Image 1 (cartoon, rainbow, N blue to C red):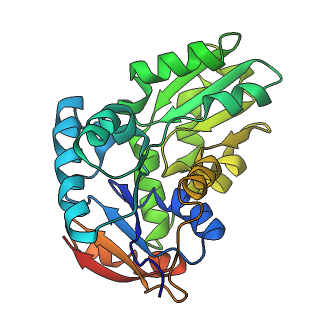
Image 2: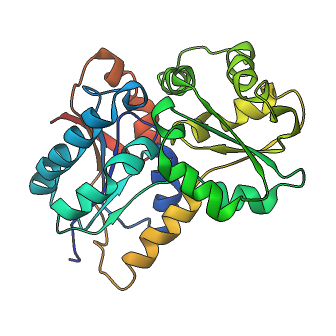
Image 3: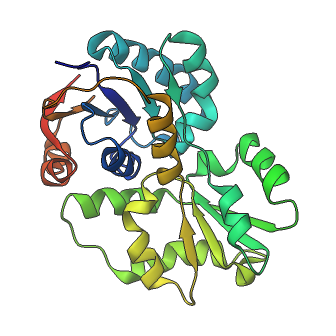
Length: 265
């Protein structure tokens, strides 16, 4: 019958779908559990102490309930703050999400890259380290946007957003010193690839956008190589820490990613 243990994806909202999608494409037989900490959303405006306390405890409960073979923290903010603590607390393989600064630097012709994330992510020392290691010869311009997280959630709820919304977010990055030279932007929040087409259309000039989703999917496939899967996996589950009307309006988008059942933790 195969091993029915799922891969568990975790985020504060639905941004982790940008990681789940390429993983599902590589591993179509994998049972999936997607968890949105909607009661704690958004993480990007919370303090480091709140996130460091909340995420390991919540993932501990989820690991007990769902017995995952692997957990993906599909959230840059949670990963840059709590990844080490989660790995220390749980006896489960953990894959984190970090800004794709290395591939962005490799792509940039102007040697100026943007890092577009949440306020909490862009101020982390982890980002300093990535920039020093992989983009030392680049100007690395950062901007935090809680607004873009909300826009991505709104889009997946089927609500209207406008090009002006995305242009305003980009202006917050491109108007910073060095921003006029940026030719590659790192979508350093898993929500942001969900609106990458809208960002590209609203950009004042051709700009490439990169994110870590495909690389994370390859890492998941590597870590589960040789494991057995059920021939017919059960429908995917979407778990919300608060299942309210806003969460329920995400049902069509979740179903499009193979998550047909909505439950509350």
